[in-house]
Length: 90
Image 1 (cartoon, rainbow, N blue to C red):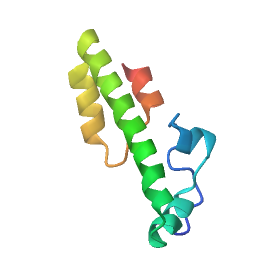
Image 2: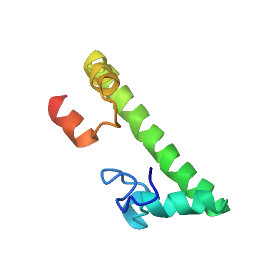
Image 3: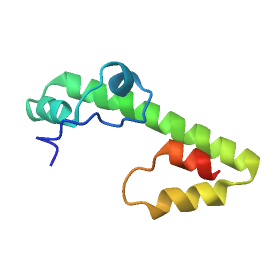
Image 4: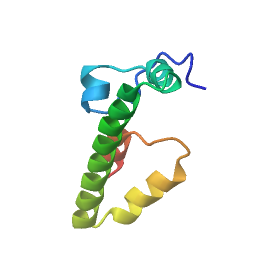
């Protein structure tokens, strides 16, 4: 699925893996296929950043009383939502 995907993991993500290294999905796929330990490290850095951002958005939405909107937007999408699109809505 990702073997030939030359796009960055998440172009909207500000983590080191996406923003600084600009790691492509195909490159990470290859590292995992090779059982290279770097694949796990890069995935962990990205995933922790993703969940930290998600939790920050959740806390902000709770404070602003817009959590149900955030939840509905997030749950209604099959793919990972774009934070930039969500910020415009909220």
